[in-house]
Image 1 (spheres, rainbow over the protein chains, first blue to last red):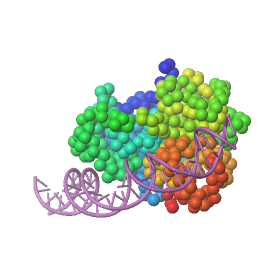
Image 2 (cartoon, helix red, strand yellow):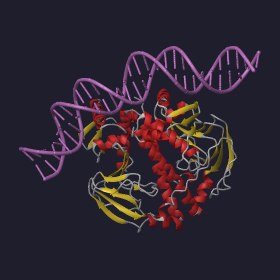
Image 3 (cartoon, each protein chain N blue to C red):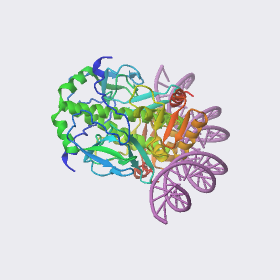
Image 4 (tube, each protein chain N blue to C red):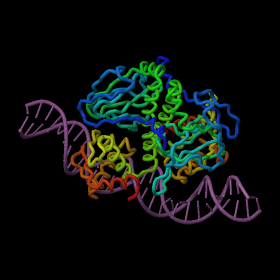
Length: 232
Length: 232
DNA sequence: CGGGAAATTGAATAGACTCAAAAGTTGTGG
DNA sequence: CCACAACTTTTGAGTCTATTCAATTTCCCG
């Protein structure tokens, strides 16, 4: 594979740590944004509102939520430090963005972004890489929602979240869950009860240990990996 | 809403008509690609192969397929004229691309795309708009797969496909299905049998008419629209 | 036409859901 | 710092939607 293939992907992730001081990476957007602090459970932007801003997570965690007319709820994504939101929106936000934990974000006004895109090739290219990464992640989730069982979904989720949280090369042995069971259920297309039952099942099989409601230790990561691919 | 918000979205669609002569729209990629004809059921690119090219559909229809180790199949997308594939790929294709009908595509070598991105701001910005559109569509499908019933999924699918096929402003009253039931099932996260049963159910309720296996007429489009949102 | 694949229909099953209750956790005020 | 209320999570029992397996029927293509 030639070097030219790597270019589109340049999503950088920093370790996830609530309230930690995070230095913002060098990026074409530097200086365009303003810092915002969002308390737990507060809304950053509302589904259906004009998409006036793009946000980048500095610390904490957010969920992007969409509601069906009858009240069914779907969590499209969890946003961790380094993640963006609002780039692909048309004129209105298609999702509400809510803080799962106390969170700090940088808000970039869309007109400023648009202006940047018009004038800077490298900036467009940088954002293109970000959106490509998001699309790629969305496609992984399509497979998960379309073809995986409850157990496979949860195994996949735990591993993916753990890997996103820990930046170091060694595979994580535990994962923090800043969101509650209901959020996980709506993210994985299942119910709270099923999430709970699957966690219990994994605990009984000694694959995980539920240190507390918000922290899960991997006792046998290999078994989780097998489960996530449907190989057990 | 100010005009600046519109900029990112500029996905153009042409009428879907197999074997029709299609004039390629003015785009920054003009001249970089070469035309390729793909026979029905033939593969354009293979899951796991080096992602050396980006493709644009001229006429026909493709499916992008992903397989789980145990053989479960997931159709990530159907590509119709005007659609792109391969932009968001990293170094290997994450999906196989197969022709659902005889199809013509334009193939753009990735190095040429990368070169273009490096030198042209407008080109980067154009592709950014395309990928944003793809991400947006993927998110609609996440909601569908995560939270909709079999009936809602099929109603949503039929309407969306019909609207993609007909470019004219008037809402379509029928839809062509170039793919078979298995493809639809793997796209909507269900089984062939369930697809068939739901179509029969809609026919019995006189909401659709199954003109033949590959063409469905909407008898009561409003009812379909209600069903697609879970309002009936 | 005739053979083979695709689609539909049927019957029984299974995985996840709903409703309900118990157990655990958290936040707050005295 | 404890007690209590409110909420979250877990567990249980029964139900339902979509699946699996099987049998036709329909549709193509040669």
